[in-house]
Image (cartoon, rainbow over all chains, first blue to last red; front, side, top):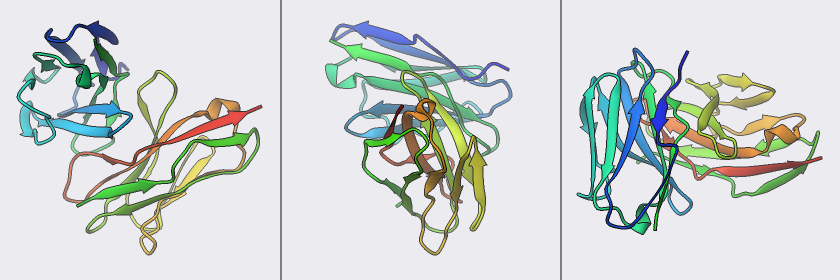
Length: 112
Length: 112
């Protein structure tokens, strides 16, 4: 079975550019999470969707970040404009009804 | 609030040595506890979990026991291999929560 699929795997972009990260959760899962991993702060929850509805976005750093889930099989995390401090690994994860949370391979973002 | 504390790394061991990575937590009620592993350049994979006190999770020779009295979930393996070199994350989901709270991670390097 396919796991959580993220794209792009790696992105290098210039400061000020818009970045869009994409995620396809595991089929049938109704919970979706976006996490950010940095050396300084470790793994942080950015936003949590349940049944395509954002339930907790308290971890979204600022207005430059936005996330959408237009349907059960697709989510995006957008950064506009991007800044060097946004450089991190962004993970998407999904689960079904509070069971095991499965992670994607991550999107490795570098903003120069 | 909920939090997880792991021992600082990096941990360097010789092949076939005994491994312990300490993890303690703070949470109200009875959280579920997890160990995730991240191999270089990859996403997070669930290693094992325990959902109630005195439960033992085990997988691939790794074990951890949910100790309510000491609020701990230490990871152990009797004989490590070079292929176990990775970063190990302890995490919890509170009994009223939905998302993983992660520790900072412990880097393990196993040398031949």
